[in-house]
Length: 220
Image 1 (cartoon, helix red, strand yellow):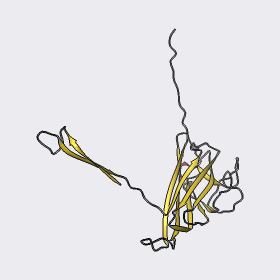
Image 2 (cartoon, rainbow, N blue to C red):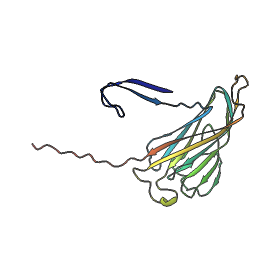
Image 3 (cartoon, rainbow, N blue to C red):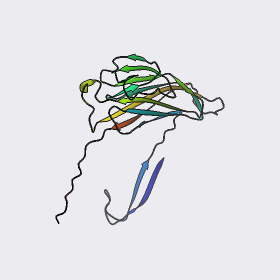
Image 4 (spheres, rainbow, N blue to C red):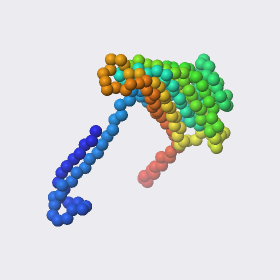
C-alpha cells in the first residue's frame, strides 16, 4: 500500500529559487505479506527467572486456500535454557545437564500439540529441538506448547559454567518447513502445488537488574 501527499510549502525548498509557495510531495509505503502457512512464537514468563520453567507457545495458521502437511518445526533454545519434558521419549544427542529433560525441580511437562522427536545439545550451549511432522486442513490452526528450564548457569560455549546474570537476554528462535496443496475448488490463477513453504519467529526473555531509588529527606 502506498500513500502520497501533495501540497504547497511557503518556506525554502531545496532546489527551488524565488518566492514561494512551492509544490512538495511526500510518500510512504507499507507491505503486508499473505502467507499460506504462518507461525508466531511467544514465551511466558517474559522475565528470566533462574531455576524456573518457561513455557513457549507456537500459533500456526493455514490459509483457506490450501491444506498443509509435513510441517516440521525446528526450535533453537538459547544458551542458559534447556528443554524439559515428562513422558515423551525424544532421541537425545550430545550432553544433557541433569536438571534438563526429565530431571530437575520443578518438573517439566510434555509438549502439547506436537511430539518432540529429537533433542541435540550443541557445543555453544544451545539446544536444537525437532518435532514430529504435523498436518492441518485448509483454514486450520495448530497450537504447540513446550517448556524449557531457565538454568542458573550457562550450558556451553565461552560462558559455560558461569551464572546466568541479571540484565542478560535470552532469545529463542523457531522455524518451520511444510508442504501446501491448493484446494481443488480454488479457481485459477492459483499455485499448481505442492509447494514447500517456510516461516520463522522468535521470542525473547530478559532478566531483571538491581535498581537504586535514592531520596533526600527535607531538612526540618
